[in-house]
Every structure is written in structure tokens, then in C-alpha cells.
Image 1: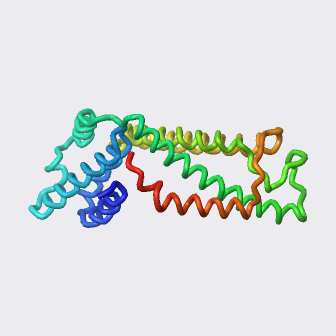
Image 2: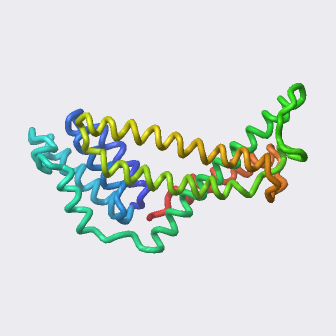
Image 3: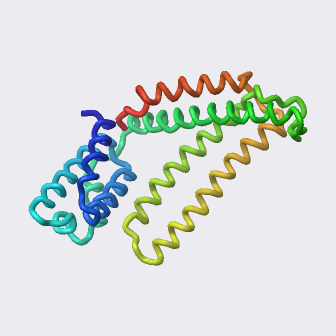
Length: 230
């Protein structure tokens, strides 16, 4: 069974858990998935844990009775004993995030290009001279790299706060949400303004062709990229 199949099975089986056990288990799931360990081994272990909880429910026990009152400490011990991701695994993860970033960029470029061409017929848009919606700036590489680091930061944040239930945890999540939104916005503002106000290298790419390529990239993602084990 590959990683994608295990994730889908996990999603189905979790629906059978009692609310209290599901909440307990899903915190452990978030912690483990956001840890720097091989994805395939992570999903194997998560399925094993889920089967233990389901079996415990049949015997009238709770997930807390199976794993103990300190799930964070339990997860820390498990992660410490597991191997870390190698360079091959990191390369697959970079490919995964970069492919998603490219797919997203192509769709957004195509949709915005069509909108700008329609709006530009009756409203003058103050972009730099010579800018056309059928140009795609090479600056989108910065956007993709920024997305990659933001995703890693999100994972790191999950490990720090997933078991937090007090007021401090709420404040941390609020601060995280605001910082993430600000960072995400800065990446897009950088791409948006530098692309249009500076003379940056561009690729000739019409909005319609951008949407077509986006659809092709998404199809490849569905068939191959999302099934990568890292």
C-alpha cells in the first residue's frame, strides 16, 4: 500500500472514532505528520495507532488509556526513535511543493490575465509601460520558494502548539495566523509590484495557454506527484 492509499484509508477509518478519541488521535496525527521523519513510515505508524484505538473502543477503552495522559511526550519519544528524512526524501518534498506552486501560479496568472484584459478595455490600469497580461515574470520562482518555506514553518508551528489547550496556545495560534497571512501577502505583493514596475525577465505566455498548462500540471499532480513517498 503506497502513502496516498494509507492516507485515504486513515481518513475513512477516523470517521469511526468516538469524538473524544478522534480529537486525541488527530492531535497525535498532526504532530507526527509535521515531524521530519519519512512520510511512508509516518503513515504506517499512524494506521497502526488508529487500529489500536479502534480496537480499544470495542473494549470500552479510550485513546488516553491506550497512549497515556501525555500524548505529546509519547509522540516526542516515538519521533526521536524514528529515522530522519534523507536527501532523496527532501528532494521529493521540494518537487512536491514546487509543482503545487507552479500549478497554482499558472492558474492564477491565467485567471488574472483574462480579468485584466477585460477590465483594461474601459479602465486604465497603472502598470509599467509595455506590460501585457500575456507575459509571465520569472519572479514567480521567488513566490514558489517562499511558499516552500512557509509550508515548513507551518509544520514547525503545528508541533509546537498542537497539544496547547490553554490561553497561551490560543495567543500563539493567533500570532501565527497573523504572521502567516502577512508573510503570504508580502510574497504576493513582491511578485505583483516588481513584476509590473521593474524590467524583469518574462516568458511569453497567454492567459488561455497558462490555464491549459495549469490543467496539465494539475493532472500530473493527481496521477503522479501526490503519490510521491517522502
